[in-house]
Every structure is written in structure tokens, then in C-alpha cells.
Amino acid sequence: MRKYILVPLIIVILIGTPLVIYFLSKRSDSPQLLLAKATRREIRVVVSTNGIIEPVDRSEIYAPIDALVAKIQKQEGSEIGQGQILMQLNSEQIRTALAEAKAALLQEKRQAQAVMTGPPKEEVAALDASIAENKMQLDQLNKDLQTETSLYAKGATSRSAVESLQKQFAQLQLRAEALKQKKRDIQLRYTPQDKEWEQGRIAELTKQVGLLEQQLQMESVYAPKSGMIYSLPVKPGSYVTKGQLLAQIYQPGKILLRAYVDEPDLGSIQKGQHVRIEWDGLPDRQWTGVVEKPAKQVVPFNNRSVGFVICTIDGDPKELIPNLNVKVEIITASKPDALVVPKAAVFNHNGQPTVMLSEGERTELKPVVLGLVAADEIEIAKGITEGSSVVLNHGEGSTM
Image 1 (cartoon, rainbow, N blue to C red):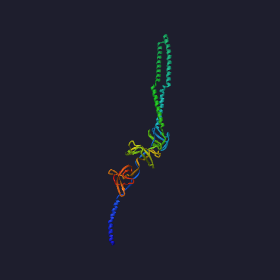
Image 2: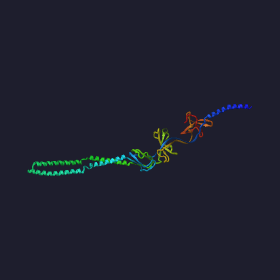
Image 3: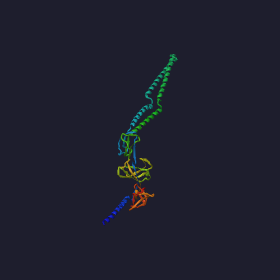
Image 4: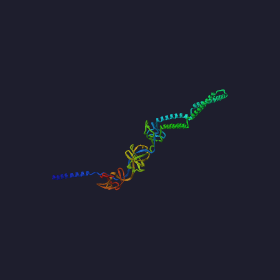
């Protein structure tokens, strides 16, 4: 009897076991659905990028002359008052040029003295003495000639004696005219034009000396405003050229943000949009601000095409200093009570945004109307209700 019972049981086991294994394997092959709930919360559409902190009102100090940096009185990050000395320059070139200009001016003054005051007094005195002596000789010879002429009329002297005196008198007269002409020539040795030229030359050299002295005073570089030194690109011993940047000063806390926004995102940037800022140096802190000036043009920047968006920063934070590189999020749109689902839940089905709803063991395709689209979430404006379960691994090839 037991034998007849065992045979059907064995047959059932042999037939049933493969069937059970088959159905279990088929069930294990079915993928598990990944679900998410449609919930209501704030959704934000943001443009994520980077930017740099800049001062609102900065003062830049440039080298006034070509010189060597001899000494720097302040360091980067230190406070400096208006009119305080920042650094001392040393220009041997200016010092040499000043010494040469002073020597040239002194030489020119000496040379101009003779032109302006006329010939030396000694030369004029000697000439006057010769003229006076010649006149005395003429007077005496004239008397002798008159006496000799009177004697000749009486027959008391010869004609040759009278002619000899006349000849001497004529020679002295010629010499007198020559001495007078020489005096006139001395007095007219320098023309008014010569004097004017000398005066102009002295004025030019005097101006040159003054300019070089002013440049030498520029060796001391002073702060034009009070503030904090946030950039000091030179060091003692460096050689700087005129116009080279020496330092930058700003008022701590008076800063702004220059955000580098990629060209495709510029269309969504508007004045007044809220901004969030993060800095790796203080990872637990966040700062807020507002877009002040949207970009006016697109420029190449580090292999990107960007627009510079200027943003104000709330609270004048002193911990954000110029030239810091920061992370930036510009909130271009937001809604406080939106019905949102993960972005992976929405796909395109027959040209219509669609989600796959899961209700128990069954699923259903549901067309929806979209609202705001964020990086990871999408607002569902119409089509499903809060709490609906949507499938994330729906298998559709085209998501939104």
C-alpha cells in the first residue's frame, strides 16, 4: 500500500519542482521598479558658475618713475593711512641726470654773464686809457704844429719840419678813430638776440633741473587713500618702470562679485536675481547677494565664452577679500510650493512630456504639463497629484 502512495508523490515532485523553479526564475528576472513620490516644496532654477571677489572702490598705485624698489614699508594685508609712505624707490638714472643738469646750468650762467653785462671792465678801462693818451698826444702835437707853422711864416723854420708835424698829427687822428671804433665794437659785441638766447637757455636748464628734482621726490611713494593693501606685486630689489602697478588698496568689506556666466546661460540673467556664494576657504559659510549688472558682452575667458555679471554682496563681509575665487549660484527662477518629481521620472512619449505612475502591481503612462526645470527636479504643473508614485527606471530612451 505504501508503495502505491510513494510513486504518485515522486511523480508530483519530479514534475512540480521544475515548474516552481521556472516561475521563481521568471519572477526574479522581472526588474524592481524604482519609485519616487511627487511632493510639494520649493523649486529653484539656478545657474551654477564661478566668479571672483573685487573691491567696490579700489585705489591703484603705479610707479611714477623708472627705479629700483629700495624698501617697502607695508606688507600685503596690512592697513595704511592716507599720506603714509608705502615704499621707497631709488633712481640712480635721475640722480645722475640731475647732477649733469645742475652742472650745465652753472656753466651756462657763467657764460651768459659776459653776454648780459657786456665786455669785462678791465678791457674797457685799458681801451679808455689808450684813447685818453692818444688825445693828449693829439693836443700836444696840435700846439707844436701851430707854433712850427707860425715860425715857418716868419722864415724861422723849414717847410719839411712843418710837414713832418702834420704827418704825425694825421697818424694820431687815424689812431684815435681806430680806438673809438674798437670801443664801439666791444660795446656791440653781443646783440640783443644773443642776450635773449642766453636768457632762454638759462630758463630751459632751470626748468629741467626743477623737473628732475620733482622726479627725485617721487622716490617716496605715498598712499592716496586709507584702506587695506590687498595686492603688492613687487618686492625689495625689484626694478620697476614708470606706470607699472605697485599696489592696490581697498576698503575692507566694500566688495562686489564678478560672476563668469557661460554664454548659453546669459539669456536667463536679469537684474535683481538672488545670488548665493560659497568659498572653499570657509566651507560651512554661505553669502548672499543680488545681480546688479547683467553682462553687456561676451568675451573669451579660460577656453570659455562668458559674460561678466556684476553682483552686490549683502552685509559687507570682511572675510571675503579681493581676488578670491568663489562658487556662484544665480537663482533665475523659483516657486515656493511647486509639485516636483525627480528629473529622471519625466520622459518624452509621442512628443508629449510623460510620467509612469505606479499603483500597486500596475503602471500607467500619464501625460503631464511641465513648469520650472531645475538641475535634478522638474515641476509638474498639471497631470498628477501630490503623493503620486512615479517610476524612475521606466525604460524610455528619451528623458526631459
